Image 1 (tube, helix red, strand yellow):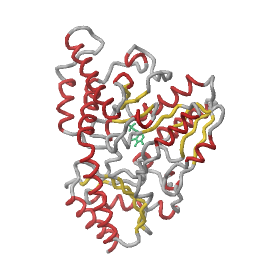
Image 2 (cartoon, helix red, strand yellow):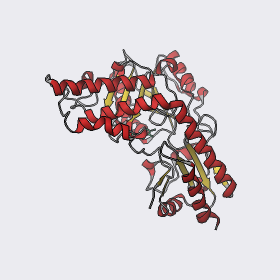
Image 3 (cartoon, helix red, strand yellow):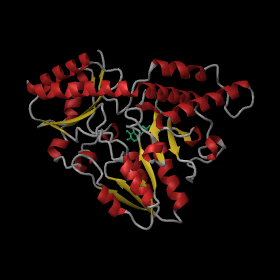
Length: 376
Ligand SMILES: *Cc1c(COP(=O)(O)O)cnc(C)c1O
């Protein structure tokens, strides 16, 4: 059976060009980048080329990029790294209620270590209220971490205004941009971002590679002790092939960004229109403005999303209820609850996220299947 994949926010299929670029570093180019002989130097050079490509996508300097094992590690490093190295200045951190578990659970862990966290509310559109943010700032606030774009409802947060508020109060600003990166333009200099997390497998690179941008001059404690890799900030022999892959994925993303956004938006809007025309009583969760181009999150009335996903799967259709990370439990998503979606509707929410491998025909198929399952 053909797979129709509408879960590109959970992960993406690796692009051929990316595999081609990384392949030599899984085979003949096996040198350790710390070694002085030629295959070691080749590996080192490949890493630095990838670093330039990642930096270019978000407009920072290559030396401000630290490679990590995933988006979650980037988030952990950012929050714990800043918390530990600034605890003499204060122990208060502000984040939002709709963050990814990589942020929320890191915050819970910091709470156990004596840090104090404020989880600010969002409005019905999923947007952080800037006045609430301002009012949450305390003398001892050391960090604000607000996601760039939400993984469930695609809401794009007012990043520039948030960074302005942070800097006016001498607070470091981190953003989890795992969903935003490669999907919408990011310019860390123009937007005043101090730290940013990104992940390879959401942008057509393999799973298990990520990066953290840290603005020059910002001190943070290292997350993994050991060798001197990544300027002494992240020990462990570099994952050369995957770093190369991430670099290639970022290069492709940067080159095609405008076209890619338009493609996803067209697919998404076509899908939403077609579902609206064919399925009664649907509710779109989150605002359609300030939203990732490839995201739609829909609640179907009187439907249990896990049941619907199960049926869709039997037709080869992949989608998700809430986020991949919270699948398996039956509680309504914390994001939908935070934007005020009633439990009944939250339990019938399905997220469709589009990607480069999708086309219109697949969406026609999806809507036909939805009609079969829901209407008849
Ligand atoms: C996927 C995701 C992460 C985690 O990235 P991994 O590379 O899977 O660890 C973090 N934040 C957001 C918003 C995500 O969508």
